Length: 193
Image 1 (tube, rainbow, N blue to C red):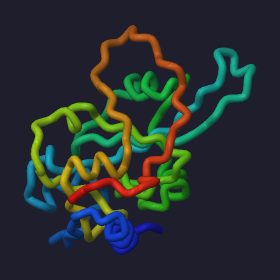
Image 2 (image 1 turned 45 degrees about the vertical axis):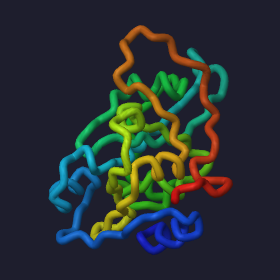
Image 3 (image 1 turned 135 degrees about the vertical axis):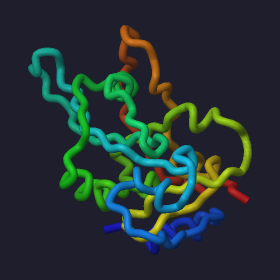
Image 4 (image 1 turned 180 degrees about the vertical axis):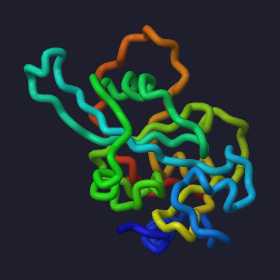
């Protein structure tokens, strides 16, 4: 399983300024980060994992099943319909914990948006990207119940290469063509000075 040390080594390699923070209490889910750190929820991010299926209308053609991650503020639940449209999936739902553990190599409730498999597309709530500019530090889980990753929001967004999406898009908007994902880990170094 991936942990704080795995993340720390990768971030050092990418020359990304960051901090691994020891939590005063253990957490079972990333939604507990604000309480553990004594911070507002908008400074703590959670990666929600969904199971997607893009089978045809009659299930006549074989569909592709995959996981996708969605980065939102702690406590927020992205509308499944918005995620489904963004991924071009026919069906979507929260991924089972055992599947999340196996695919991401993180504890299911403590998934970090970094070092995810290339086969797993990653979305981010556009409000987190378009929010107030600045070097504000955000916190995400590390896969461990006793630590969190502190990193500047713009650096995290650049490193995880998540696609910004409007998670509040009105119903009735047609689904875009299916996205076949790209890597969400940097293939080259990003300046994060």
